[in-house]
Image (tube, rainbow, N blue to C red; front, top):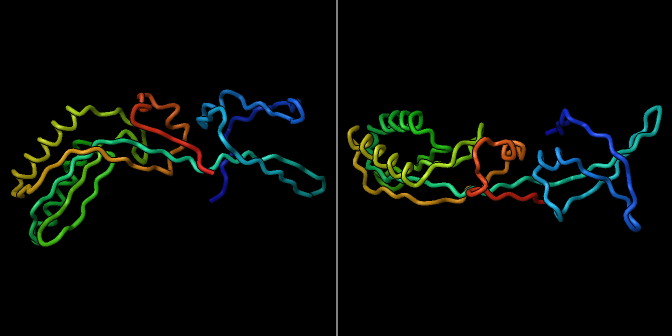
Length: 191
């Protein structure tokens, strides 16, 4: 993957602080990358020769890692082999109605299928409103009713919290989110 340069650039000046030279990072870039005082980083000196000699400093922040605490509804469903296609259709329908941030379906032993619906704020494409426990419980009851009315036996239903790690979230998405997600999200830059 190649680097993508942000559209906003800033001109600055190098200053002296004790025996070191310092560069000020504008507040806009600090907010865009969710920078914190005391955060570690790596500075590389870069150069290239063409007709003239050019120099640059690259400030490397590392990998942006997000941990989200998200409610999950997990169902264990009895689904014989001839009903797997019907189960997939029902799961797709439920996904369209309740808009979970992720859906995981996996086969357990015998006819048991586990369906996990994660109701997080972070999705691959957007940041959503954090859902309350009551909303998740109500959705779980409606989902269970839909599964049973579609002819499936729900062997187990569980509502739990999961910690989900995201490594592909642009920090600008979190800083510009119209919903307050700081209660359920923690992030760090990892060098």
